[in-house]
Image 1 (cartoon, rainbow, N blue to C red):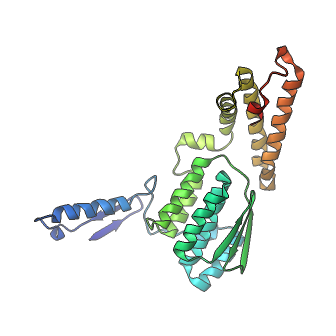
Image 2: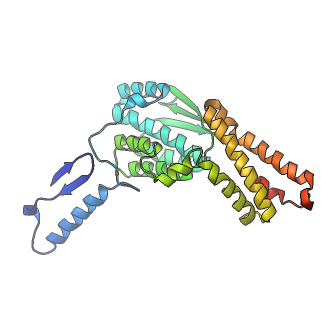
Image 3: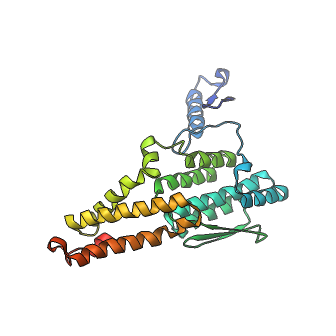
Length: 281
């Protein structure tokens, strides 16, 4: 079997002299070729199967320090697996905020690759104890609504678990996913601001009517609160840093203030008749 690899594709070819022409030989070779072709495909998109290695210099200082220590003790593959697990947990928790699902994937990776790591997954703060507590990493992870984006991280983790990709390929694919290289332009538009300002009012208004039984007045007020929420988040994301941790609090305050203004004002006789749960939720 001869394998050729370049930066654009991964092709597997079989020597024709090795294909048996009698009995089920041709079918077996065809099946092997199909399996090899399938294994060369990514979980959702075709990714680059090349000799590239993940650039560890791009890691945050604290994570890079832990990587260097683990590399000396247990080798590069083990050290990169620890990095892969931590980055996967952060991105999954950012969207899901579901510790059970995130912990389940972490446990599968830990068991598969015999990683000596424990973790504490809180609402915002994540703690990772590496090498039985010799290192501890803590991260504050604000909630995000881009679940499709984090869904790719889950699929990358599953592909690594099933040994369809190497740890280098998994880390590179994570970087490319975060950079938007595997997302359509429309997806990139609504993924970041100011594109999200178009989505939030529509999302809030439709959910108020469909899921919480609001009427068209609630639809309009919910759209206003959605726009206000988007503007608040846009401001805090632009500031960056720890300011993003205040997103949920300030969004809730702005929604309550706007809903309260309409409820108390009794404009055009609608006051006191609003479906407040449909607006607030």
